[in-house]
Image (cartoon, rainbow, N blue to C red; front, side):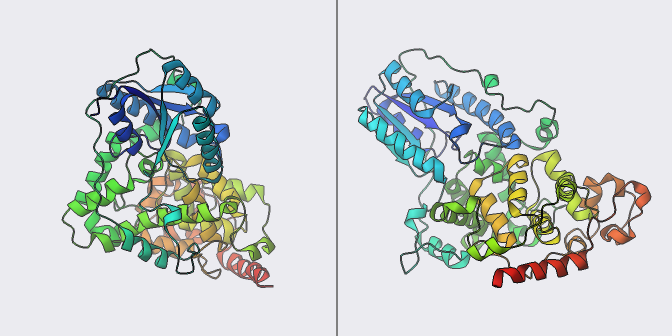
Length: 465
């Protein structure tokens, strides 16, 4: 540790961890630290949804406990970020503000403005790479342009992947010399008024320790069979690290390092690391094409004849479409704040291709209900499904929910778990909407698959005009 006795503000955002946190690690060398989290949802590109607010409440609580063990306290503030940072510096004599970079369009602009104002006020500002393996500005194709196709993007990233090890947490940090006012966590009103989080409490352990446990469990129990099991929603074949990554309770570098140290010889070519690559690709696209949050990357999709159908949208949201796999996924989402990725693709395809409802409605619903709602991944995923984004699914690829269920939930166990009306229905009848006994209070299909497919193909012809 340095013998310096400077005071540095460490601004926590989507990096709620003490391990491998460059801003915290570097600030600890300078002397005293003021860790601060500022709740300013109006400054975000999109205000956090209900599920992510629930997770954030618990993640902040976990970070507070970790920092207290190091000898300091997390200061909570609400309101305009620049005003809070300036006031903290004035009250404590802090000489600098350190933070880890974010890449969302509005946040980037805000952070640049904040850095400028802080420097004008005489403060040192240092920012660090902490949430990606490769930052968007570091990756470009041979023409000096951003990538729009995943495979060459990821091959390029893998060539640049280095063997850097995660940073340790500081052993101890010095608190500021003055006591600080802090907002109570309960005053942020992050937890839902209704008891929506009850089921999520049973499923998730937000916070850095929960992330570390999930990573260790995945590598020891599931990584070897990930390529085979990742598509089966009733099998524990995925890492379930996505919400931990979303809040920065674990870093991609920690995941990469754990894979390297695991003894698995083909970790670098693994399907799992490529899923981390898709997250990187999402941020690459969001950085270079910020308009895609609300508009199609491929402009010809502005001609697509989307339909407004509120009753069908509500049926989809509530898991009442009459298609068992779709409904199971939507109900899992509502109960746990998460949905298996294979099922996400099926339910998303159903909304935009069977119902021709704009992908933005789906993106908004996922944004509000997913604990791992991430602007880059959510945008990329929905544009991919709609066919309007980079490396998008072909327009003629329209998932059949029935055949998807037969293939990936062959015994019907996932469906029976989340659609209790069908718990007495056996395979194969449970997969076919026309064979399900409607006496179980299960709805009839809101659309015929064959008719919907034909309608979707005709609609997609409009994008070729």
